[in-house]
Length: 404
Ligand SMILES: Cc1cc2nc3c(=O)[nH]c(=O)nc-3n(C[C@H](O)[C@H](O)[C@H](O)COP(=O)(O)OP(=O)(O)OC[C@H]3O[C@@H](n4cnc5c(N)ncnc54)[C@H](O)[C@@H]3O)c2cc1C
Image (tube, rainbow, N blue to C red; front, side):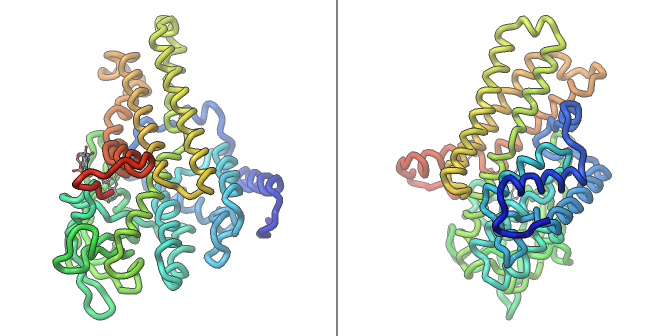
């Protein structure tokens, strides 16, 4: 396996294929159908989650140790130092195989690491980047509070400095993956009496300590993928501060940018569901002749494919760096999933709500119910449309500016 930075793309793709094929079977139309997730929120039993988490962590470690875990990352932090189109090529190869679900490490790997590269000092980068990319550390995001969601500048969790450490008291909410994370990216108010986005600081806090209690929140779909997190005298060393004191807002904005890009590029979740719905339609002669059903299915496909192409074009134009345009990708994806969900309900009619014994029919309700979560998480539709209006179209900001 070559670790050279001057490898030819074709050779690299061949190496990637050989590597992934040595560990996982190829995807087939049947395996794709079987693995499709109807819920856009994780809806796992504790046993399934524990198994999937272990598989995801093992796979990340295997890829990292083989030189495929951070293809476009800096060599000094365990990356391979190749241009980002090599990382894209690897992802394309991986999608052809039945690899473990990367959702468990997505925040740590794809959102936190680029944020740390931009904002953490050299010591923190050296301490954290490799373990996060290798999934030796898994992180959650401790931003939202009961009175600070879209308006994150209202954060009230306080961190007070005592010598080389900070003591943290407050409450976070909707923290995805808090129950299996070892660390959390924390936004706290560090300047007493400060207002809005001034006086906030970002830290990476250890989750496993007496001052932190994680209480699961049960979703209306049945799962519990996020939690309330209570911090009462929790401690974080100053060496885990990310960026200068009082400058946490720019750290958080970088995180948001990377988060929206990741959600917007979560390739093909709508396309996979269109494929599922097409197979429902294909099995029923009445539906096959219903032009409005075919038209709506076709429209969802056009929107899905053009959304994916648009996102790729944005990323290519920006050299892989997500800009405010990525907000459009998330809004388009959510909108298309709504169309698919409505069409599924119209096609299945009472079978969508009354169990007829076919698991796939009930599964569409998971999509319908979980979609509200996607509309809200990572910035609500309204906030993202405002981002597009202000930062893409350059329209003037309203009197009370949006925080996120
Ligand atoms: C699936 C999921 C996962 C999440 N994971 C995490 C996580 O890991 N970590 C974390 O910190 N948070 C997480 N969140 C929280 C999420 O970021 C917030 O729920 C979101 O930012 C909205 O905040 P809120 O719930 O307080 O709603 P609010 O901000 O109170 O908004 C309520 C409604 O008012 C609208 N609104 C608010 N302000 C404006 C405005 N200025 N202009 C127009 N409309 C406005 C909103 O669009 C929304 O419809 C998650 C949420 C979900 C659903």
